[in-house]
Every structure is written in structure tokens, then in C-alpha cells.
Amino acid sequence: MINRIILILLVFLCYASAKAQLQFCDGILGPAIFTEDFGSGTNNGPALSNAVTSYQYVNAAPQDGEYTISRDSGQLGSWFSFPDHTGNNNGKMLIVNAGFNAGQFYRTPINGLCENTPYEFSAWIMNVLDGVQNVCGSTEIPIQVRFEIWDATDTTLLANGTMNPKFADQRPTWIKYGLTFTTSAGQNGIILKMINVGAGGCGNDLAIDDISFNVCGDDVLIATIAGETVVTKCENDPAQSIQLNATVQSGAPSLTAYQWQQSTDGSNFTDISGENSFSLTTPPLNSTTYYRVRIAGALANLSNSSCYSFSQIFEFRNVVVPLAVPRQNPYISCDGELVDLIVDVSPGTTAYWYESPTGGSSIHDDSIDYTTQVDGTYWLKQKILILVVLVILEYP
Image (cartoon, rainbow, N blue to C red; front, side, top):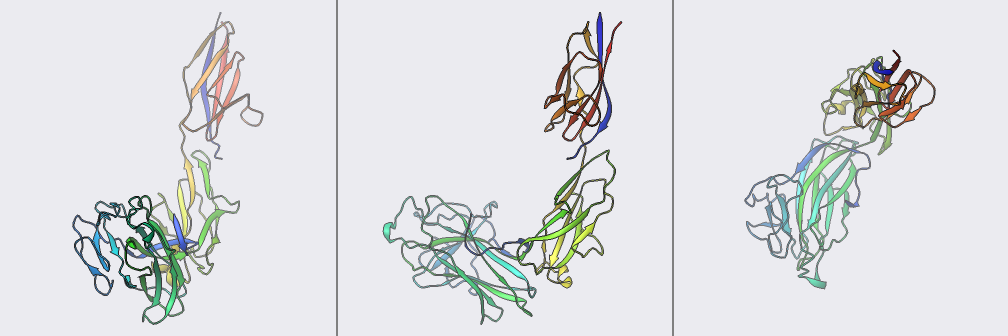
């Protein structure tokens, strides 16, 4: 006697279930208002303006009180030979051999700021002295830089901080240092300064790269009322409308002007006209869509990149998962012998076998195969996929 077991796919359902001291922005950084990576190239230079640094430029290994701009930190034999922090091809950095007297490594004005807005200044610094060679021994002078932010007239110090003394490392190590401050009413420009604190001599040799100045925005979470930051819908489910809320997680909750944005790829966002509240109710969604909020201290500042930052991103995900595929169809057995039903499922999914389409308990967990000799209908459920499987036993 021959039994024929046929595996039929009936129904497709879907179940979606090294920073250092000083002070960094405790929210989310907005677009960079100012950056300096010192360019790229195989030759040293060019020299900086005398208004930028008080050190003397040389197109060679710098001695005390001198600097160069190069793609290789190993300008002297006792220094690490190492590329810049940026990681660009032949990217350059500012390399300084600190003078015996305190001097200004770097100075630049930044204009076009917004009043009553928090900002972060940061720079990456490396002690270029090779700690393995230890040519200075116990007389080594560590690198130490003071960071200062002055008003546009260069008469009022707005914020400052000094890094801890940093001795030579066993391997080249870039460390990020930062300083935050908030502009006052009517203030739209500042001056950034990096000043040598350590003495000259053996040591106090450093590289500086990737100087940046950014809005320090609130860390704002976009989530549903239930706290979800991702909502998943399977392709055959009906469209969904979702209420989203923008909630400050950290930072100074003074940035209270909102502009909701949406995107289809999570990278390119467009404004949603008229949506300037802390909450948003989406239209019925049937495709993958991303939402975020552009945040500023006032509505007028939402159009000025020097004034705003962005929230975290919320994702509405429309999931398309291929059907499970039977290894064989039909299955043939002889006189009621056991038959191993096997299906191939999408990577990353887990299969559960049931005897009813809804409710009930799984009769076989976490497996793409199920052995049976009982005719009937079986349902295979995955984390994202439910596959209805009909098993028919035929007796001639």
C-alpha cells in the first residue's frame, strides 16, 4: 500500500513582532559649522596664516617652537610614524614641537552662530613621541593643551578647559578632547584657541587633526506611545497610522522648535509641511518610512544649519519575506510509515509547527522539519512568516 503525502502551501500570513576629560556634548551633535582637517597630499605644507598660529612653519622636521603640516607624524626619529586621524588618502595633520614658552597652536574665528544655542568644540590630539624608545626618560615633558572660547571681540573669555598632562604612549593613540558652551543673547560669533601649557624641551611634541565645531542639540528620542522606535509591518498586513512623540532624553531641553521630516531611505530627509509640534500622527503607512525631527531654539533658527540638530531616527519597516519552500512535493510513504516534512525558510527566521491556524501550542519548535504519519493540516509559523501547510494522506 502506498501513502501519498502532499505538502501544499495554502496561506501566507505575517507576524511582525576614547574620549578624554574636559566636557563633551551630552546630547546629539548637529551639522558641523566649522571643520579643519589640514587637507591632503604627499608634500608638507602649506603654512598657516600668522593669525592662526604663533609657531614658525618649517618644511622639514620641526624643532622647539616650530610646526609643519604633513601626512606622516614621524618627522623626527624619536616620533611615531603614523597617518592622520581623518583616514583620508594622504590626509595631513598639524604637527607641533612645542616651544619653551607658552604659545598659541591654533586660532580661528567662527561667525554666523545663533544666540542662546549650545555648541561643542572638539579636536583630536596625539602625543607623537615614541614611548617605546623613551629617549627622554624621566625628563620627558608631557603634552598639555588649554582650549579657550572667546567672544568675537577677543576680549571676553566664554569657556575654557585644559587637558591633563599626556605622556608618550607605547603605540600611537589619537584622543578626542572637547569643550562646550552656550551663546548668549545677541552673540553670533566666537574665537577658538588652542594654547600650549607645557614647557619646551624633551617631549611636548604633538599632532592635531579634525578640529570641529558643532551645534550641541538635545538627545531627542522619536517613539510611539508604547515606546517603540521601530515598528514592523508585513507586506500583506493593512496600512498603519502611528502617533509619534519627540522626547528629550538628555541635553538642555531649551531647543523647543521642531520640524518633522520623513525619508524613504533613512538618509535623505524632506520636511513635512506644517508639522512643528512635539508629536506627529502619520498617514496610513504601507511602505518603509523613516521619521526624525530637526530641532532648534526658535522657529526662525530651523532654517539655519548653524542653529539646529537632529533627533534619533524612527523606522516604520515594511517587511517582505519569501514563502517557505518544501524540499519535496508530494511526499510519498508506504503503509503509514513516518514522513519527514521539510521546508526551507528565510535566513534568520525560526520555525514553529502547529495543528491549527490560530491559538493552540506549538507541536514542534525551532525546526524546519516535522515528522508525522497522521493526516491533517499543519501550520508552520516563523518569527516573521506564517506558512500554512496541508498534509494529505491518501490510501488506494
